[in-house]
Length: 233
Image (cartoon, rainbow, N blue to C red):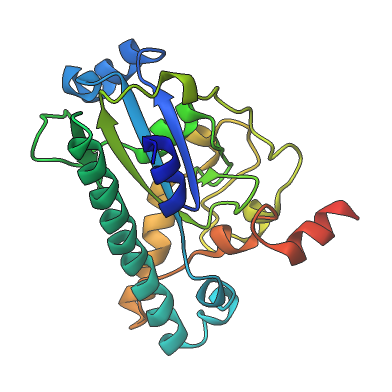
């Protein structure tokens, strides 16, 4: 089985990022080790749909909120396990690989800051950064957990091209955000406020609720068929 075929067999969404395209920007942000190898394998793993669909109910139901919070972290574990299998396969084929897990860290390289797996996914062309600053795909919206593997495996023929945002005039996540952390601007670095998002989640914790929200993840029409119908009217 070819490397790319094996990757596709284990993932819900995947892509290959050519790190040489944005190496100056990447090195400035993360340090030179981020470009130790020329390619990044991007792994997208779906979160549990049944649990995601309960998100609107979690604000008044702590059991459901905890279930969603648990799934958030469980999806990280599943994605990391998939990455380990792929990395082992690559190494058995005689190539090198370094996993940057969901946290964006690895003991094998020295980075200025934790790597954003959204960056490699965007470079690979598997999705775009939405107004909520989540990596969004046509197939599943932002309902995915991401992991990156840096590698020197010969995957150049599979590299993608960065996607333009498909958010356009949609403001569903803007209007749905309970913490007013999203505004209607095309640049996600300006449309999304991590401070306001964090403040809202902390306020839920201080009130004795699980630290969970996820409304922008739930409402996005690229993952939510009900929202998609509203948007198409």
